Image (cartoon, rainbow, N blue to C red; front, top):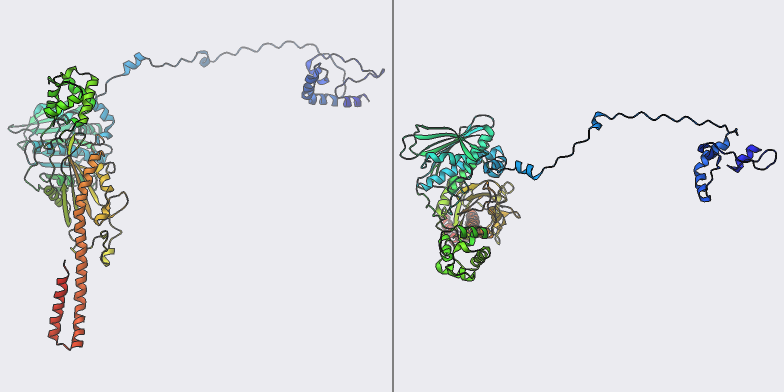
Length: 639
């Protein structure tokens, strides 16, 4: 019974066997015993929580047989754990992170030369890949040769030879018949970046920055380790100067390896040899394409080209007259920025502000200078060096508010319509040619001239060949020729020039391409997709001549999209387009007339036979009648 009672009471003290009263609970000796017996004193709420937690243990204790509680002697205290010896890695503390200080950063700072910068960023100069590097090297050497010959009044004859020494190892040699280079200037011209005579003058020239040919030599040194070899002879010298040099990129100065004199057959001229890592490939954007386009824009130049595969090409001069030599001009006030104007005021030698405006700028008369100073609230006799920043800013704003004459245009020399067509005929064979030279215009105070030319059709086509698309408002006569090769047509070829230099890369980023693609060529009888070049046998040539061409990068591959430039290109293209539309409509009309004449010749004999049967005419009369009908019908239809 005592066992059953313990199961029902679940933790209450069992009654004694003699008296039936509950026996006094024995004090447990340990906390584990008290938890098993359920006799831990607690408050009501606390006892409930502890009872729920100790319920499993109490159930297990009740299920077991009742046994007398045995007092256990206190256990001996456990010995403390042995101390853990620290490892060698944890024994030494981690070193604190060292940060730079102003003094340590100052020790690491140093100036960077321009040649060192471009050696790491050679893609900015046009040396992106081996194929383009070969083209850029030839282009820079040819541009320098043409500039030197024209300034000296010599008809240029330029020889270009490319020799393949290995799979990707080439030697480029460019020789001209120019005036040559004096001895002390040869190392600076070919061994120092940003060294030249064209950067500080405002006049049309092919080169601008003094980077190109020295950058080509630097690229050859970086890729092959070979120096640049220069041979130059000036007029009147018995021997030529021969140099082997390379550029010191850390100091941007030439490092001369060899300096001597040699016997050289030409009486005057310069020869440059550069070895470089490159890749030769024919087609568009190649050296062959560049020389063809150079012949278009420079009809007075003779080019002799020997390619790596042994072919020799020659482009003879189409004229014996040199272009006029452009004259250097002073900057125009509209193209000056505030910071430049402030520097000019401090560096001028003029004694008065009025004299400063008249002598330092072009197209500023004494009357205009006085008007500018009156708007700026300055006396004309004020000394330029005494002006502060606010006064210079007032003068700058007054210049923008004053009406001045446009810059002089004798600093820009266009190719000319006749010479542009002659150069185009030498390279592109077509049925129709036309060219337009616009009047001079100005952007940011810099004068420029836009020229355009078109070559349309194929020479082997007959005059009665139908154009691929009929003009608006007219429908071409149906025939088999109308459907011929409609799906095989290619886009028109666009040829871009800046100061007579072909632009072969970054076409879509150029203002010339944007203007040509924005034209509505359908109005002139050509097919065209939206925002694309026209379709057909068409070559479009656009040339921009300026004292300062606004290129988008140092590699001089695309022209910036100034609104004035876009407008002039559009107007020139529209003029050429109207002439082309007239030619296309005339061809359509001639073709239609020829078809109708063929119908007349086909059916008049049948009419003659019908008349003979009806009127009973003789054969001679029938023949005379047929001839008379032909004459009447042909005279009534004008070609």
